[in-house]
Length: 124
Image (cartoon, rainbow, N blue to C red; front, side, top):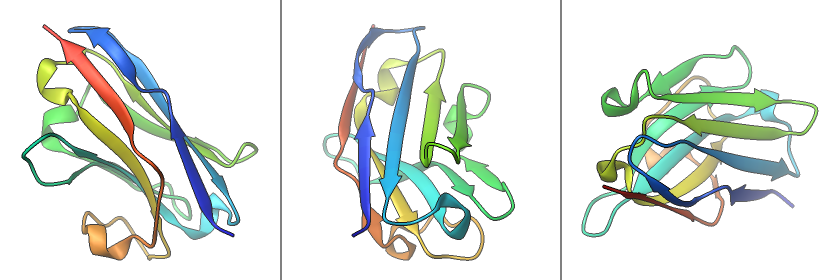
């Protein structure tokens, strides 16, 4: 059974950092594209970052470039999202997702499996 377990959210002041974790089971990261999405109240879900296990290709939303870093630990079958210099506009529920897809994709429909969300709140 494929499962994704997201964790690491919380409340942080602007300028602070958080690291989100997405522990995968039932599949190996090398075969999938993994992404972090977020959804703020009243807004559409958007991809924040994506990572292709097969070749290490990455994608970042323009507003998080230079602040967020996606990485993986294959031994732990876990993908991380290190978030630095957080801003109030980063406040959202963050979701990790996995898709059996060749290459990086930002289309949520390309992702087959979703973890539960983890709340990130950045205070000003």
